[in-house]
Length: 89
Image 1 (cartoon, rainbow, N blue to C red):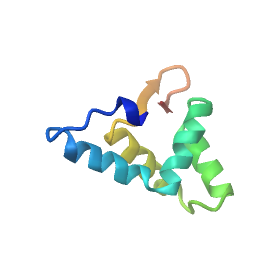
Image 2: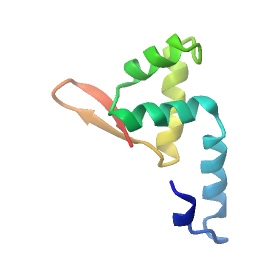
Image 3: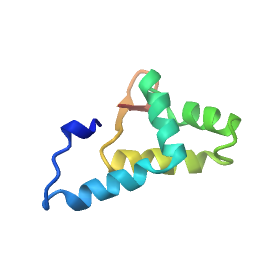
């Protein structure tokens, strides 16, 4: 999301506020950086975040990624070949 591309008006003020709050979290920013490199599963995201001491449980990384999905910052799709959910930007 590039600031020059953000349309700021009263209609989308609440939505933008939620997105900026989500982006103020270090773990959320790290997840976005990981997904910028390549699409990943929650297991991959958890493994990296855990090795860096950002999460202790896989449920924590799942909740963080899903918050990014809910705020339309990350896409979620089912890969029928691997039978796993893949997160992308």
